[in-house]
Image (cartoon, rainbow, N blue to C red; front, side, top):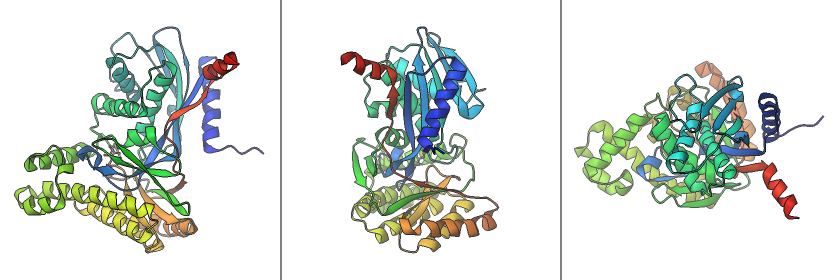
Length: 402
Ligand code: GAF
């Protein structure tokens, strides 16, 4: 019996649904990955450093151009629901079909930049767990940006596509997120994490030692970014930056923070402390990863988790329990911390491959007893960022050129 990879299963599902739903074959298949952040949480919108990698869980689109201005989008993960709109009309937020707003938002940004688009049929599906802090929404924004870029010859760079995704989320969807998720989904590198300077948007690929596994454990405690305290945390960070008289907390080092912290509101000071120490930890973690120094990496991840729990206050008891269980199973031979925006979602562990089974056994034996929830475990490979998987038009071009 043929076994299909996760990616092949998505391809098959999308091609079949596209033909059944629209009555002809798609010309393009395009993908964008989800991400896991190894360290550097909430530092992106403070112009700080983050260290995420793209993962082998993706959002994928099958698409074909139309010869009118109509956009039809079929969402396989929402019972095949189809949302239709016209590019010549103003694009508005659809409160009855929330998933389509990530798509409308990206198209709206493209049109505002003066990009000439045309009608398109799209089927979309993904295997990035939704609402788990693994950036399923950023992957959707980036795959849509990629789709229009490839199919309407827009010549956008990966960075521009990421910025358009972020703008869509900020302005159309209403979440004030930073740039990390879209940028890693667009620019990820196989086998590597990316150290991203969220001020300059420069990236440095940091290779993951081959013996190290990236293990994501979903607490299955659902989280919602827009409805969560995310925007409040951002406002508190901005208030701290304003109190220090700087553009962003990136511009305050720990010595200055310690000297002046007392002048800040107590909660705002703790928020700022997390950001300033977390950005410094991220730079050190990138070095430790490069040097294969697991003990230092593990300590930095533990400090990061504690800072998110006590100072930034974005963890929940289920997540803290999961981190304690994994930490006890791995000792000093790796690291574990909450990953993503917070208030539920996932923890990430970096452990030698031979410890993955022990982590799994510990979680299975203890997590449900302690919380009443069952965790899901994904062992991931860092993968390349978004791109075209298949283009019938390109293949025809190649044939014509021969
Ligand atoms: C969410 C946001 F979308 C990111 O920009 C980032 O701030 C992250 O939370 C926290 O590090 O994923």
